Amino acid sequence: MKHGGDLSEAIERFGGTPDQWLDLSTGINPHAYPVPDRFSDKAWTSLPAQSAQDQLIGAARQTYAVPDHLGLAAGPGTQLLLSVLPQLLPQGPVALAAPTYTSHADVWTRDGRKPVELSSIYALPADAKIVLLVNPNNPDGQLVDVKSLLEIARTLTERGGYLVVDEAFADVMPGSSLLPHMGNENILILRSFGKFFGLAGLRLGFLAGPKPMIAKVSALLESWCLSGPALELGTAALKDQAWQKSMTRQLADEMADLTLALQQNMLSVFGGTPLYALAGTRSAAKLHDALAKQRIWTRVFDYAPTWIRFGLPGGAENLARLTDALAAVQKDL
Image (cartoon, rainbow, N blue to C red; front, side):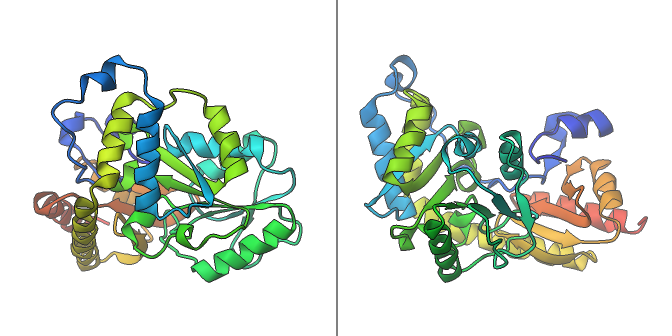
């Protein structure tokens, strides 16, 4: 599975219709930020205004605690933002803390600079110019502390290189973000909007870093890269601090319930974040298929055949459905 979140493969292999499936293959919040019944007429009929983008950037700066001396760009999802980085960052060897989200390796490989995979971020190659890290990591939730990241970034800055940190899941782990602690180091931070706010289809993401580099990214994106509805809804959600605090607590509670359910069904949970749990079992692929026959879609990994990842079910009824399915299929495995 290259990515989660697409039921096309599940339906092709196991049948059913989308409404019959419980999709646990992603790390997207199942409790989406409430979308208004209608957007303003301007959101649909007018070209996106610079003032609307400025409001979005201002709201993101506050939510993500972006220091004033850093630049911040918004784009149609972090997937697109990370794909432009090979065009702009310095030439030289690239290293990637792995295993992790595969798109980081893909975009650099297409540029002719296949990353060297690091089993530990602390074993920095002597010639590395660009280091890529997902923090907290996907899929195991591993978190590198701020002090260590700053030390790595300063080493790379001295080499004329960059540290690129994908903080897609930092929203659900308060205190994990490097952003508030950044000085003049060559660091670029990616922040996803869709995962925590549960609005992946809106396609919105952010990139923070030194102002000259962010200006180059913004120039590549050009005008009107964000739709009017994305600007309007993104700004409202980012300003809604009460919803964010309440949702952070709710996700932590639901993950505790999911972890307990998995453990009670003989699965060893050894990683994750409040949006997904990573479990280990010698029969991961068989378990994945057995659950799929009951219209429950999970995430397995070609590079780790004993791993299986579960996103949050999104409520007591769906958790009970998963628990009953696990109890049933475990008898046959």
